[in-house]
Length: 385
Image 1 (cartoon, rainbow, N blue to C red):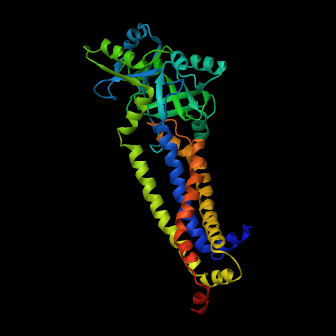
Image 2 (image 1 turned 45 degrees about the vertical axis):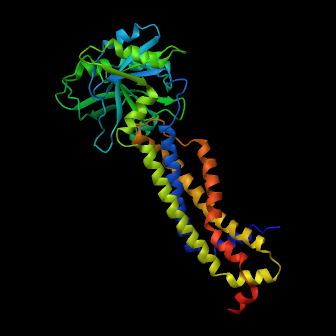
Image 3 (image 1 turned 90 degrees about the vertical axis):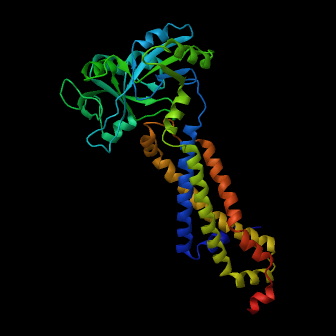
């Protein structure tokens, strides 16, 4: 029977070496877990909520606006159930390091198309009552310690407020929303489009993009082409895609994140493999006389190899567990940083199984050389030298 305590005691003979090696493993598995969460958002398949949502933007550039009245023509199509319009506001709170994922929406139609943003009936009434009211995610509210009824000055780098003659927009927190699933951003800020449209200095009666909810069972590709054909000869031609494609394209305007992140993971784990292998080789080399004595006392090469593997496994698992814990604690911060162009960042439960599998394989690889030395170990030669 294998003694599970002995490998741990051997690993802790040199605590400084153990924990320094463990720290490199923590960093590697932290990066792997966070990058897996980002890839989950990049490669997410359509859900029941978003597979029938179509995003219509300007054909030339996403930053160009569309006339709001386009929504009426889109809504007249038989396969379209609902339509709403959205304008990018952006902005920041107090200083530019506190960037906000803020959009101006039409409250009623937006809530019908996006039911994953949970508001009570009282919240809806309060928002409809306050023209300058805004709805914020709970995480954003907790970050800035906002409460319902607080008046908050939001600074914009794009939109001039005609009422104040500055880029400052005074708004009141009308409600704080929760989310139905972890895929949904809980740090957005919604302001009313009618308030925004009346107060801005330019761009009135226009929106950054339109969102159409297709009827269940509709052919979204055919419907997207049909929408674009409506405005093909207009001054502002359109391009319509599903919401998931829209999000991916927006993210990949910056860089092919999926490919880059995989490259980072490979580089990190290759470096980790070298560090862990060197640590295990050094540890076993220092104990060759002890291992020779154990062999002479009746320990087989298989048993000694198992003890060495368990020692490596303890080290890798300790680092992996700490890395995953750090990632789980900080994933909300990562989600807020990427929320502007990549929502839905979260740790998929499958990632935990992947971490376990990688730890098992990594431990086997990094102790491969020491185990070979154990099988080649000659008792008399080792003790004599």
